[in-house]
Length: 213
Image (spheres, rainbow, N blue to C red):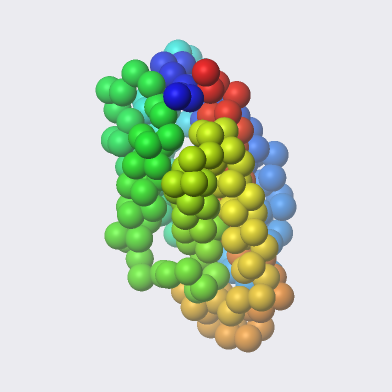
């Protein structure tokens, strides 16, 4: 059965941070069309701070998630800090103390992170938020494993579904947050949160696949 080590998994979070930082301007550009325009800046700030601290330690994946969650919840502004902070804090708790992470544990981790986000707000799929990427991604992962597909194939399904969920937000009308005030004018633009979520889940899947044995 495929699995990957928790130990030294901090490199997965460092790669995730690099992707967010690389797309800082793009994320802020998207956000600026229907929101405050600071999503990329705030995300890059938080992920960058976490990555800088991870450079000085040989962190496990659970330790890196906990550190990132703490930074996002406590040290950056914007609406996404608490949402993503809760996600990574829950990820960390799910795998803390576990030597290896298999598909079953990975699913538990995903669900705990998703439940953390959902515990904060009232958003649901279709409201043009990060949940439009997150929920179908988790469902696709579970669907793949239920069909007997390998961990690697399930991770591919996760990434694909996250991207499709991101793209679906173009045709949605925002129901939550500042963008909701625009009503129909919010249609035709990607949601910044769904876009960053797809990036995060894609990076997580790539990092896990690279370490599978």
